[in-house]
Length: 522
View 1 (cartoon, rainbow, N blue to C red):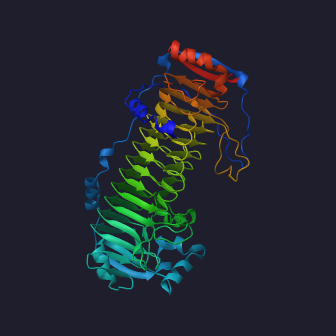
View 2: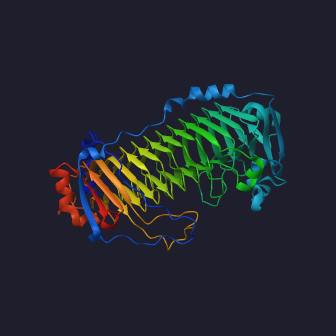
């Protein structure tokens, strides 16, 4: 480690250097879907590859188009809230089994959780209609067994709180504590707006936050259901979530197929802006969500993941966030066909595993201008996720690789700065997953790698700048490779090794680009 930290000044210098652009020439192999057997683990032999030379202009491409972030502001949230229909505020207390938004939590035996905690037939506070504040909820509930207020205006609820589709709950400049002992949580089926507030899982016996104890131990949580709108601005959520479905911390989730056949709800939406999430089981989770904006937040010291968009979500913006100290796994991960989204301008560091991950057929995404460093895995990892663009990222001092591309084709990697990582600057990897418990119908993949690497700097990584197992296609142009860690100097791994001298001559002496392909595809 002393050698690695001896290069801090070098890292600072390299980050100031400009890097150049190119174009993605990667091609993806067809996906083998609809089968519960994995694809065959075969790849061309290393001696069956041909190196070709191309002029630099063949690699030119413009920067990607980025979404307009100026619309995701406090002012826009207030504007949308003002346009939301009002109506007469109505709040009631009802049995939990009679509330559609709470159905997931009484099915499959989960109701006993609330029977035990409430010592009776489980009940919930229901915001039925109108625009309702916490003060109004407290006034209409009018029972300290269910909701109480302290002298400083802090509220504690001791029942689940559900917001109906025609209702809006506004939490402004308030602290709301959710009783762990009594099984409190929030289910938004309408609109919920929290501005400059604190929403905290609370352990009443200890008179303090419901800090994480174990994955199986109940903690309060928040879920926004299909058709709902959730807005958090300048708000802190803390000490929430455990390992039960849709109970992970803050979840934005579509109803199950069975329930949505009756309810017919559109995907859930959410804006999370300038807020803080800490000691959450998952800092963020979504399922079949769309148009979610996660902008300029802090995710610190969460348990499993910082930000975790999941199954069949799309058109997400994850921008300007600081994600660090995730205990178990990754800072930011999207998994299982999370498509057509942007992960841009984030800092992800000191996480248990990788800084940023794309997983299980997540495609069409742009991962740009992020800084990922000091993580216990890779800086950025793509696992079985084809056709993604990585642009202008900096991956520094990660324990494993700067960037790992596993079983993923059509990957463009542009203007990367990968410095002082524990193995390769960039690794292309083929991995046979047939011995795993993966469902190859739901999580199919192709045993292939193809990528284009253009511009940037792969400097002083422990194993070398670049390695790839036998790729379907590799393009390489205008990449700086300096300060090798090995006494052997700069060297490539995998199939590139046998073509090393020709590749280096083309890149450094002739200033041309190269492609490497199996003979059989030419």
